[in-house]
Image 1 (tube, helix red, strand yellow):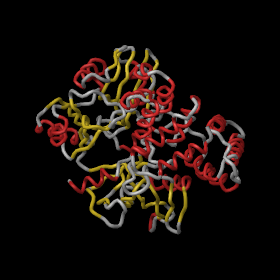
Image 2: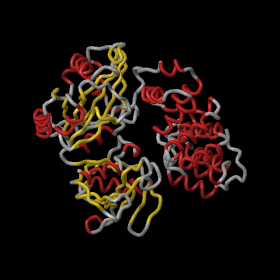
Image 3: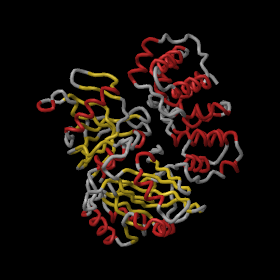
Image 4: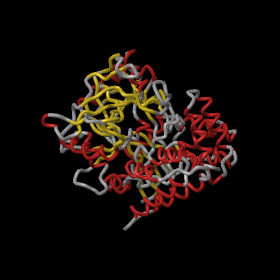
Amino acid sequence: MLLDELVTATDAVTATRSRLAKVDALAALLVRLEPDEIEPAIGLLVGKPRQGRLGVGWRGMQSVLATAEPAEVATLTVAALDAALERLAAASGTGSNLERGRELHDLVAAATAREQQFIARAVLGEMRTGALEGVLADAIASAADRPAASVRRAAMLQGDLGATARLALTGTPDELDAVGLVVGRPVQPMLAATASSAAAALEVTGEASVEHKLDGARIQVHRRGDDVRVFTRTLADVTHRLPEVVEIVRGLPVHDVILDGETLALDDGGAPRPFQETMSRFGAEVARETLLHPWFFDVLHVDGRDLLDEPLRARLGELERIAGPYRIRGEVTADPAVAERVSREALAAGQEGVVVKAIDAPYAAGRRGRSWVKVKPVHTYDLVVLACEWGSGRRTGLLSNLHLGALDPVGEFGPPGGFVMVGKTFKGLTDELLRWQTERFPQIETRRTAGTVFVEPVTVVEIAIDGVQRSSRYPGGVALRFARVKGYRDDKPPAEADTIQALRGLLRE
């Protein structure tokens, strides 16, 4: 297939807000792909090339775009683009930067003007077509004539939408339905909705396990025999960074297991250290003095037995049996007073709040439903940095005031999948964070004015707020109240940022 056909399809998707129209346009594209083109095409559509990191940044891409004259006729194929990305990803060692630059130039020069822009967006993770993975999953189901639920479940369990698309489009229904948990292959984590109090959350869930919400980094741990693998919430393998977690899991009385939990740093008294300390250690490529302690709140597989579809009550029983000393604290209750007490105890212990989990619900991998509801006394939201202003006074020469955006997945206030500005803040920024962002943000700069550096919308930051207020200043109609920085979320991609719709929901509260 010519890349031009992929570009035409994404233009059609971008041009409509109708989910059904998006699905139809993508399905019509998918049925025309050759088997070997399916996985590369899916990666390009969601801005996640199957090769992973390519070593190409915004500056490098802009330099090539400025010098590579576009082709007049579309001849570049999806397969040829995928092969070029493979060579880019493989470049390493002495001279690799020059080799990568030549390869990128040759690739871009073979593309038409609009194909060049498509390649740049795909490589830099800036696709804004509204073809989020949920829409694409429905398109795969339509193109393959398979139930959407089967496609979504397979994608969740494989952790790879491209591989699921190929199986759905080229395999049998039985092969798709046979996709299951595989120890060592990460699955998309279950996500939580939000509520203003533990009692309010209990009204949604019914009888529930009310558990402490730790201010740590989400981990998914797989063990087969002595082989232990640790994955982040984005399914990145960080085993080499967490030898202490590997050692603890190796000591559990089990042969095969998949555990879901958090890891965080503790002080000498056993209380949680600040989130920034956990993330600094979590992001280190080599072990450091600070140790991270694992705490688990769910188990998905034990010794050949998949637990995804079993109720939480059964999963917690297994978790207690195999990892009792490392289980997150909580109580099962249907009493709002008990739920509120557990919430107060969690806060007194230095935790963020609680997560209220329906006791008879299965594990819904990759989904944010009503079965898990998180409660934090101070509203905290994960937003995306859109720009940063140069500071004044003691912050002269440092990038300080952040421009913050919320995700707009449906395109209610702009392009689908884009970000809507909701406020600014410089509060909560430590000297260390100021130095970090002054070094980091020019590396992902898209443009600048005299006082502001505008950046790629790829950096997630956790912001605490006292609420929101109506505002005509910002396109989403809301502005943050008393926003302050809690810390950067290196473990979260921008696609998992909180939405403008969630912030607008605070107006109703």
